[in-house]
Image (cartoon, rainbow, N blue to C red; front, side, top):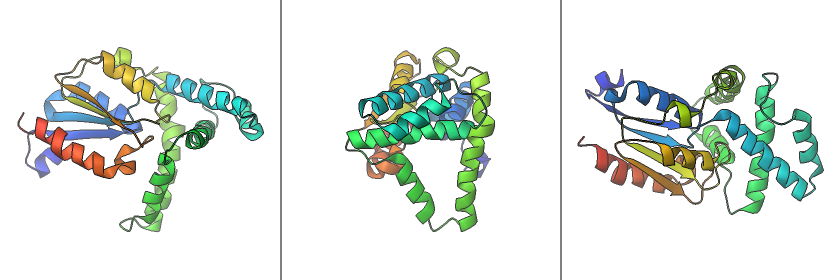
Length: 228
């Protein structure tokens, strides 16, 4: 549809968060349709991500003797999580990760910025904004278990992509742990690849450092790939 609408043989594909899973799988299957793939908050292995997040939150809760955090984390048990109340379990872990990261670093929590963006955006109706959060919850409840069952791991399942690849990663991203994205990048084979750090961002550098993000897209990604 996009190729036809803009009369282009190829288009640019960008994924953010869970969208990076769709992005990698899409360019892996149809590389001839895309100039480039851009991964923001790149996901690699959902089981390993949950394990890293849970262990970090639990270690910080113990370090600061945070009673509420310890109680909530111990109630849900360590990953891998069961499908029952999956969104609640993952949200509990991520919320405490955000809390401890924000307390430990000069970092604007990406979730707050995304929440503010959605709630203040004038193009969206109140119904649109309400549906955004319902869809987010549905993604975890309906789609995330499928990723668990598939044992998604791009280190093994997508070690090579036949398009240029750019990863844009927040230095404080623990929603999709940056260390996994970095590990994936180091083994990934691609015609061209680049890993770009956003030093003041968490999971959403496109929202948290928009000026830098826009500059990179225009002056680097577009400039380096447009003539392919």
